[in-house]
Length: 431
Ligand code: 4AD
Ligand code: MG
Image (cartoon, rainbow, N blue to C red; front, side, top):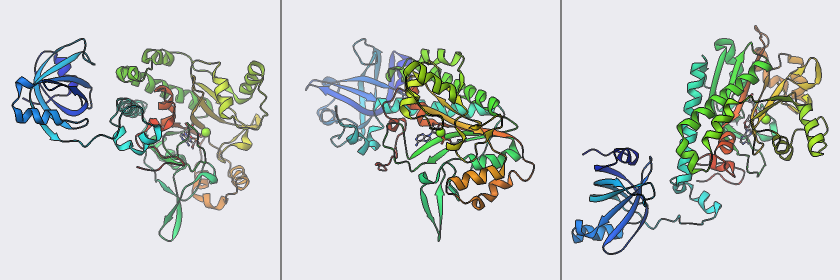
């Protein structure tokens, strides 16, 4: 008999089954033992009766500890009292790998669970998040394929900063130095002159000194860059991407969302609504008029302000035209309103988090050189980037989606660290 997953066994519902996995819970007496078995698909209650086994076997069963790996054969039937509604009466079993006393028990501190992350990722919560993450990545690939984009790979080791020099990780590179990618963008921009519509997903690094629940030092950004498009087209496309991926994931992972106490149907409904676009100046007006919060033009929105604005919306909102002077060097001035940049962020409802950042790209070498000097950078280090404006320059735009931020929001996670298996933050880089 071939092994099936627990999910497949439950779909079968009656008769003989063969399953394998790890002991999730165990309890019992010297006559009967209940084991909840888990595999990647689900958990199921298994009952082992002493009468079905010889003394030798029973001794093995009696010694089984949480996380031991076992294979078993038996008959499955519906049982309302069992945790997932089915029970297997075990006829044959084989211990594949015994387990030491498992260090993870109930009520352990978040720090302990992070120290033991290599084990904690087996938990149902982490499994649910990891499955949603996987589904999200697959949905994105599907979306970009449908939209006619090329996947374009870029170096992780890069010669320049691009999003602010104070947050780059320096890497020794033979006798020189290089930096871990802060973004894929500058290379994505080079690629649009060959491929026009490109995207990719990759690890992104920021040496941010923030110890918040929304910052990671290493995160995955899902970026896209398109030739010929301006701010309007790119913001509408970003909405389309997010709507597609969230809807797809909510449809595919309904069980996982339920486990995380997140209503997948509500997420799907949200993707059917109109997602507004407002200007930064309008956002300041909302803050002032509705919340009595005064923010001066020229300041970036802080967490508290993002959160406050988003209490007025029940879908993501695109905020455009942030003050040019505080933006990354490649974000162009709006010719109609030069103190504003042709850029945008997308903020999510409920937790008011910036989940996307993007812009039209400046084509003005002079302007960008000034911005770089303003930021303490040397324009001559950006020759390759400026060349893109010298040989058949075209308007173009792009954006990056913070994958863990989106997951933090849709999975209702208190901390962004739980959006990935092995988080890296200012204070954590192990295991
Ligand atoms: O707004 P950011 O810095 O934009 C860029 O890097 C652009 N070069 C992207 C582009 O236009 N191709 O980062 C984009 C997104 C943010 O909106 C946020 O969701 C996420 O990346 N992000 C972080 N996520 C987790 N931890 C951090 N430290 C993050 N910094 C940015
Ligand atoms: Mg940003």
